[in-house]
Image (cartoon, rainbow, N blue to C red; front, side, top):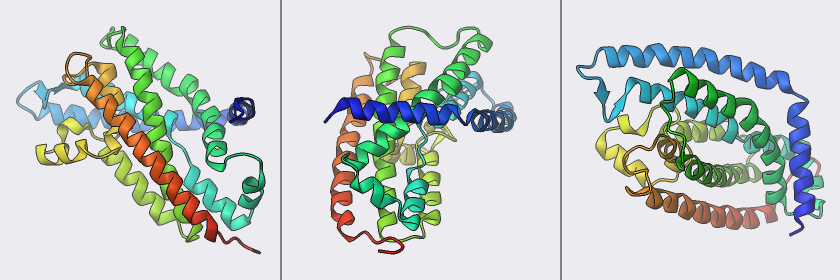
Amino acid sequence: MSLKKYMALCRGGIISELQYRLGTFVTIFGNLIYLTLVYYLWKAIFASSETDVVNGMTFTDTIIYLVLATALFNFLEMYIVWDMSRSIKSGSIILDLLKPLNYRRFLFFSYFGHNMVTFFMTFLPTFIVVYIITHGAIHLGINLLYFVVAVVLALLVNFYIEMLVSTICLYTESTWGINIVKESIVLLLSGATIPLAFFPEALRKAVGYMPFKCIYDTPLNILLEKPGYTPDSGMWINIAWQLGWAIVLGLGARAFWNFSIKRITVNGG
């Protein structure tokens, strides 16, 4: 694999994202409205509780978790399903497949440039603001390094889930419903909308064996150094789960794509 050509794709993704900065700011504004609603919702939930700690999380813990989850969503989110669906309908996917590049790597590095820009424009500023407002509630130490490792693995897991679902586009042009279901499941079971700590115990244990928690819940709990997510209390097991799911989903996505690409049909051919 020639790394130089894929780095060029990454650079192209960065340039493309920087050309549409207004879209990023609109997203940030929308997130502020969403987080305002989340703040008052959880404030009411904790106000009605008889204790300041619910399922091991305080109100401050919960808000920090959800704010960073929203920022992390902007960083990790890919729109491969939508883009592939459009390229199949227009027939432009043929041009991409004819390029002397592995198509899946082509997609990954193209989106990676977008991920890099959103990290510095959304997640990092959000993290700094949260750290200042909470007067250093987030510990800054070796947990940051472990968090970066977990985020990289989360990016891979999310990408392979996207590839598995987007490959369905090769069979049907009607992907809107499939993608909405996928996004709803991922956001709910990954902890992006509700911390998994608030799930019923049976459901929480079941979700623990699924790949979705690897995307948001695991990195955020490592960052916040929650019990079970520190080096001496099970963090390596959770990172191993991330790595394991990245490998399994990667192999599954590759096999599904190689099988499905043989029967691709597009408009006009």
